[in-house]
Image (cartoon, rainbow, N blue to C red; front, top):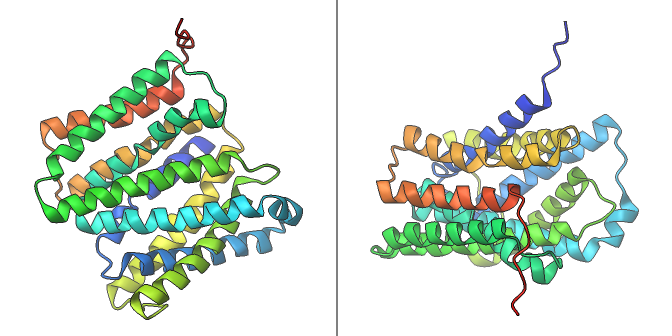
Length: 294
């Protein structure tokens, strides 16, 4: 009997793990940059061990050829996580992740300019829906100064996430695992410098239960989940991966409701459906190009 786990189930597990990261971060009483620093340290060590123990060669020539893009992507990765984690602390996990996931809509808007892709009706409909959802979600949080700061952090993380997606599209001759490993190392260096300058201390040591939480974010949410995700990408069709990637934010909403007792209003639920549905529709639907203006 074949006991090998199907790649679809493995990818499902990875998406659920990614979706739970906010629950753990919410309970870590450290500066956001310090959490990211620990995440990048543990994650890069874990992936480094994967290459070492599995005997996978690292494409050093490909890294050299893409070095400038990898450096920019590493900076964007670390900054994106830092702002998202700050948003988790300043607003609800559900609101933060929903605003964060407007990033694909930003990429779709820029794709005709950056990648010379034709604008399709599907992209236009999806982008409009995602923007409408973002406005709805944003409108509910602007009444409180603290939450407004959280909204701004989440939106800034979305811009950096979009930047990261765009930069990764420029990479060539590198596997997803290789590029992620290098970007984690670069993000680790950047976060160490920034944390040292901004707080006067490079490493902030977690205490008590926080040790387990930080270790889980580093090992499970970064090392293991990234390894499983990129391994599954090589075995599954791109559209399957794209569809299942939306289990990440969807599961976050469930986890935050069950474990953190966060509740969305009816209008906020509509905004959530517009954001997730709009970005998924833009990515998955195939439509004719929008006719050029006469």
